[in-house]
Image 1 (tube, each protein chain N blue to C red):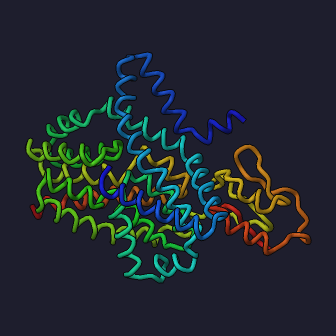
Image 2 (image 1 turned 90 degrees about the vertical axis):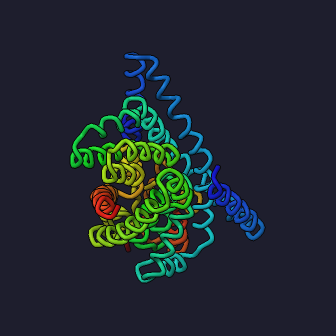
Image 3 (image 1 turned 180 degrees about the vertical axis):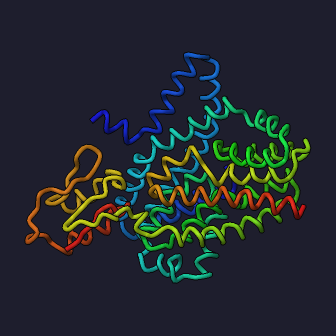
Amino acid sequence: MDIFTIGIWIGTIIFLIISFIKNKEKTKQALKMAFNMGKGMALSIFGIIFAIGLILTLLPPSEIAKFVGKQPAMIATIASALLGTITLVPAFIAFPLVGTLVDAGVGIVPSVAFLTTLTMVGVVTFPLEKKEFGIKFTAVRNGLSFIFAIIIALVMGVII
Amino acid sequence: MIMKKIKENIFFVIVALAYIIITFYNPYMGIDSIKNSGYYIKEMFMIMPVIFILTALLDMWIPKEKIMELLGKEAGLKGVFLAFGIGSVSAGPIYAAFPMCVMLHKKGASIRNIIIILSSWAVIKVPILLNEVKFLGPQFMIIRWILTVIAIIVFSWIADKIIKDEDITTDSIIKKGISINKDACMGCKICEKNYPDIFSMEGKKAIVKDYDNRTVDKEKLEETIKACPVNAIGYRE
């Protein structure tokens, strides 16, 4: 657990205790609400998690890096941005991977495009996001994030 | 009934089918995929319970006016800063931000600030930045951070122009009387408990019973509407 996760746990537990002292009924209702929220989202979340597991097996990040590394810069940028959207990799895997990409001479631009869409745009989280926020919100947010991921990557290529 | 369940959880069903097919085709691949999922399951259990509890507690204790003032349309620059702050000190994957953001929006946070929270939650939170320095160096991290913050400010503004509040509350088809947005309802039964004369459960979703408009206790109804954690109840006189 990183320090922020621990922090959120501690903060929430303190909050919960204060809430309980102030109003038992309300706190019980809140806990029930939390439980039902979890129940409502559980299948979608497990769907996401197992989909990621499957994608990581079919398209291992190291293979992606190898593939992208062979492409010309422009195609590599688009391809890595697209590949970034279908996987969802935690930072401790993503950064070493991008580190090797950069070292292997793939270049900054595709690497940054990959890094940004990796976390911000999600094909696997799309169904859940749609359920919670509606189709328009989800399509606009993911679409804009994708476009700006490429812009960020291009600008970084110019600066660095 | 079964068809309805499948339709509601279509994504999960597709993933499950994919696993079955892959395991038949190559059992090792099926096992590998489950092993690969292991880390994410652990990550999920570490963060989701606390996110749900925190969201419910904030929903209970922070009044709507306060959220509106802090993160609403009129919050301005202060709201933008706060939204970045929330996203940056968060933990867990992007979907962990969903319940929190739905709740905040229901209580009056603007679309723009919701998008800022979601995006910064995904890509610029502090633990991620530290990791980035380790592997890609401080210069890379700082430049990427600045560019990403600018990008989020710009595209959240664009998104705010495109998306209307009604697109989220999904209450766009406004009918007379009491209505329930079935897509949003998550079957928490709170409405049934608060006002059993009007609301009951049908399967996992709440329904509106036959009621006489003249005998509706407006105050009780108002409270029930407010108590709905996903804002799925609509009422038009």
